[in-house]
Length: 198
Length: 198
DNA sequence: CGCTCGATCTAACCATTGGAAAGATAGTCT
DNA sequence: AGACTATCTTTCCAATGGTTAGATCGAGCG
Image (cartoon, rainbow over all chains, first blue to last red; front, side, top):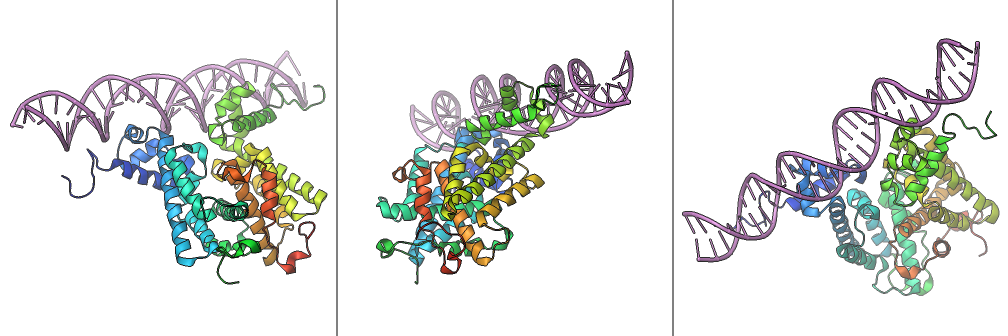
């Protein structure tokens, strides 16, 4: 019986090690630069070992995407719990994109992985619930939620790609708060959640 | 003396033919599925011919990105000229993303090409001018413009990735108009451009 | 303890890819 | 005609994703 961790066989938790190695590899170089062999090298195993645990490259990236959606859902929930402010959920979204860039870049490139994987769908749905504030948004909530999501997602993407003019500054969360202020929430929805103050 | 076109040498306008083949190839399969050899096959030449005209794969994708930014800038300008409504520029942005998906997907994946290429920078700057309404936005314009750009860019990305819930419908331009309505433009800027009506 | 069994991992192989280099081809210019 | 240059092909190489056969090793069972 091994200490406490579930070191399965020879290497010991290779799957998790490979996942971490993948995220690190994507971290420097982006998803395009992530090869199964590079990840395997980083973990000190053969590339076939990675293929064994994840099926193929898309399988590995699918695992990254799942982990990413789960992390994101958690952070969005926590942001809402602590601030009770819709705008702060958006800020958390952008913060996640910047802090977990590797995960985020994979998540929003569905051609790279199996976007129809059940676990992916579940984790993504959980994220959507946090974004819309409910599992079954009415038309009004749907529109405002889509606007808010688009706003923060667009900012995150433009920021990560370095597309925004330099004058916007170097603090993405601050920019997120600023532009969140331009989102006009219609009166009939204003009572529900809404940003703090004002 | 060839008819009228500038058929340079053996094949005749191979560069343009390869560019079109590249866009088509990206069209079915996404940028990740575009190989130099596949593009060359489609154009009926060897993959080395493609490398000759564009230097390398990144060079070919750089050409796609440049063409994309130029097209986008043109469409944004035309949208403003015809409607004089800021919101319609945003709608045109989303329409471009959907209609020229191949270009758009390349443009916003700078790791795929040489984003620091002078022609890219110029074409991108021209697009930014159309988005911000001016080459030198003041802080207010900068904030509103960034919000609007983020909003439309995010919608385009989420739409293309199929991430939005199905209830939002199947008409991306309609969604763009809807969420554009939630963008609150502060009074001190309201006189400048602004959407029609209201 | 000795054996089998199955999970894990490696070695070797294959087709495809991006890229480089050498050479063939064909316009153009004098 | 002959030289020159742009264009394109053939050929080669290293790296990649994926597959398969086999090696390794832990666990369960007698």
